[in-house]
Each structure stands twice: as structure tokens, then as C-alpha cells.
Image (cartoon, rainbow, N blue to C red; front, top):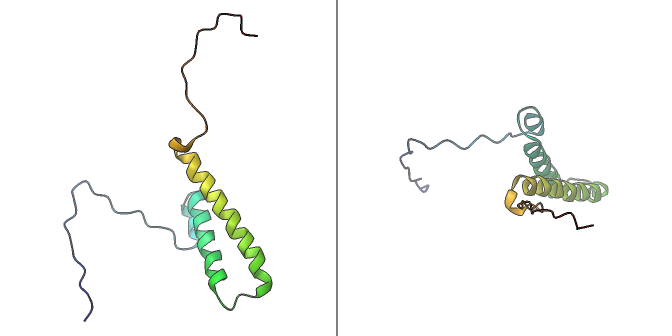
Length: 99
């Protein structure tokens, strides 16, 4: 017998999770650049795991997988202000002697 899922009541202000685009084309048409990159990464990962992928393609797919991962990381870090390298500071009074 299959295990039963437990159900719960939904809160009034609770929003459903946005549906993730399932294909690269859908991500390109409907999603952001980040969603498109994530869809591409999923597709390449599928090809890398496929035993029928020709060995000659594995190096290029692996390299592209790493590049896409770095692009995704850069976008996520850029969107997250806590990891920004730019520091917001107050202006100091200038006395005219600092050359």
C-alpha cells in the first residue's frame, strides 16, 4: 500500500509556488535569464547522465555546464545585496587638503 500524503490547510495569505518552465524554449519565452540558464543546465545535465551521449561530446558539455553554473552564481550574487562587494558609506567632510 502506498504511503498517504498528509494534507494541510492553506493560509489565507499563502501564494502558490510559481511554476518553473519545463523546457528551454518556455524559459526563453516566459522566464528570466536566470530561469533560461537553469533550464539549459538541467538539459545539459540530462545529456551528461545519458549513457548514449557520445564520448566526444562529454568534454564540451562538461565545460558548458561549468560555464552556465558560474553565470547562474553571478546572477544570484548580483541579486543578493548581502554578498555585494559594493559598500554603501556616508560621505565625509572634505577640508581641501587631501591631494
